[in-house]
Length: 288
Image (tube, rainbow, N blue to C red):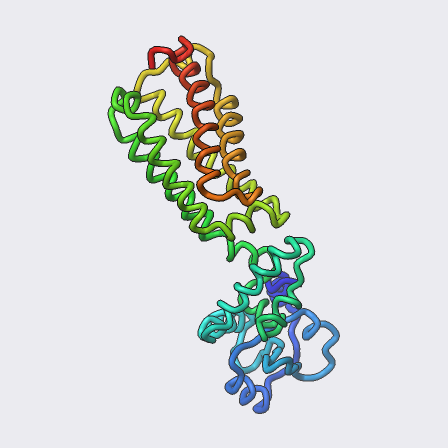
């Protein structure tokens, strides 16, 4: 049961016993607390406290003013102060996810290799997905930020300049994108091959959305007739962008050396540029 579900128990009036000096003193000495459903359910004592791996598991204590949400906040802030533990857990988690994939990755193994306990993981991350996302989310956000910055600079140009500088901006943007991917190759490998497909699909959707938004802004600013003529629809734009970025990320899946990846991506770009010229200008792109 998650702490959110546990909090619901308290809202429904599920309380456990009274406080005692022993519990108060123990709580002052403890570094942080973990709350679990089993400490509340079926408790016949006036208080419930368990000691696991130097982590105190404490139930709700009514008379001394502690509330469940206060303890949850306290466990989070206290956990962050323990130097080196989070970093070691993340390092071991990355190794475990890379080796065994998302579904088969074991939190117990991660904790053991980090010289810690599963409790130390749950203090920081409520579940396996949160732990996984803490590894890949920064790179996802930075990559999207990099693309967004380049596309926004492009869209700030007057319409005619966007048309004339379209391919130079494209060269600049994709060069920086490939550099970023290879500077963080292990994280992208984890994102693309761990088997946790929901996170990757969310990432791809973000990237494609940014790309399509830039395309529509260009069409509006330049007065291009790709939409009005029927050569392009939002659905087609989404399909083309999704296909391109999916192909681009294949270089990571196949562990392609960077120089080889750049060569293949440039060839793929030439293929897509020819198609986009046909869509934008309707004459096969020969005059553009």
